[in-house]
Image (cartoon, rainbow, N blue to C red; front, side, top):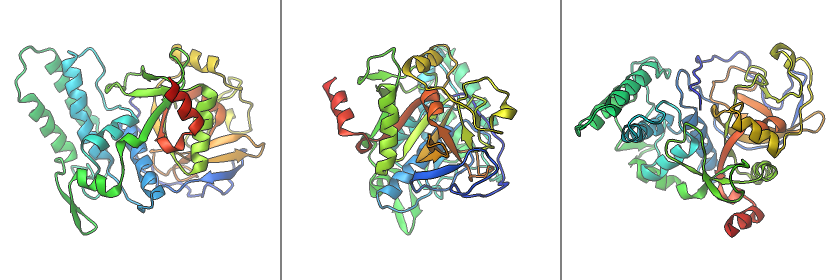
Length: 371
């Protein structure tokens, strides 16, 4: 996803999801799944970790494990060396930066484990807010220089780790949580989360449906595999998963002017209206189909920008479907950091989703298995 940095927000108005506001859009909750409070990624490109960590926190709630505040920066600390190794081995012929995808958190869950926020906040320097400007600049300069060298020593990996330790903190080999001692792996096992339970889904017509493919976006450095579904079935799968109690991790394009965190709504208008007019009245949206979606992806009008966490479903006053998403831009809107995303926006601007395999209907599972 693009390098989206946001200033840390302070709350301006704290209004619950079910309450009305000045927006012309009025919503009725259909299904709302319990989640933890919205956080702020601040000046970092780590939405992938914030969204997927929130997703795992909701998974723990669903599993009856209670509410736990998990560390986003632990995933960042584990993932950065992997990205650096890939970049150096590719001799710089690939992307290096703060962005990744949700499956990289699932990969960390499998390879290393899980850590609570209290054991690894990832904050150095006493500011209390995440700011990776300097960290990212240093790491990028290091790996670019290394990628151009021949005969690399064995020390560069330690040097990169030292930079990460200085800015994020040393890797937490052991920690205490709620009166018990854990390693990241033992904490994962105690929580009962299993990386193999989670599936990545997408929908593009340039690859066969119901088969796995490597999603072609720059941040897929780990070459994660996605199951390709027809668009209608992808939307239905997400809707049914929410209704069954399974939240969903969402990778999408948020560069559209119809995506407004301030207004708490994301819409895909039929007409090219000025942004200032989009949320003064309800606007018409097209019935987005597979062809429209593919054209947006192939023309780079739809890009991999941002990850969020889908926690519910709502209808507007006309009965149209919206997904409720939890963002990682703080609580500085009227929904405490949450938003409503129209079905048209979802259909047009979704890159991919991740969810528990039990949230997928048996009919879809059978179609995938036949391939």
